[in-house]
Image (cartoon, rainbow, N blue to C red; front, top):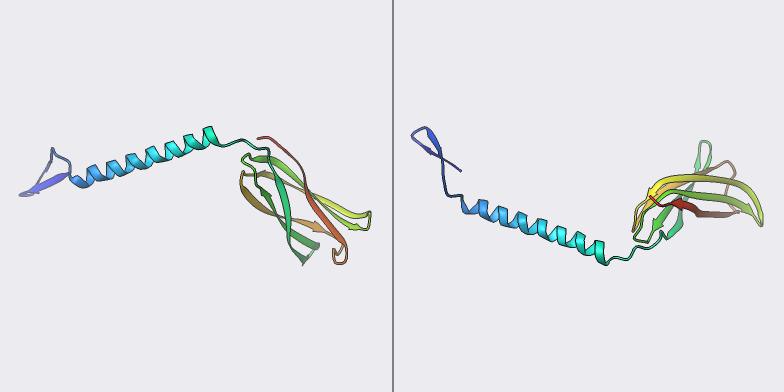
Length: 136
């Protein structure tokens, strides 16, 4: 810390108490974060990605119809190159099928996407599901 005396500046040799307090709080925070990350690394069980899809909305779009959905990964492992397939079905007959690929769906998170169809999904069965992924 600098002390001014008659227009001159000189450094103090003893640090101010706020500097000690700031250093102590910072050190405790860093130690706590390192401890938490270490605890998670050694105690958390690695589970294969567990993907589920929830349809949010169906909307008319310029090129047809957009079905918006969430894809959730409830596991502790990230899934990469996640392929989601959507089908419009009339009974057992597939009318239209599209897919979208997510770069990744992080562990314990969700992402939102949409599939575009030319055919109106009203009155038809919509089947949207995760079809595959790779380990990152």
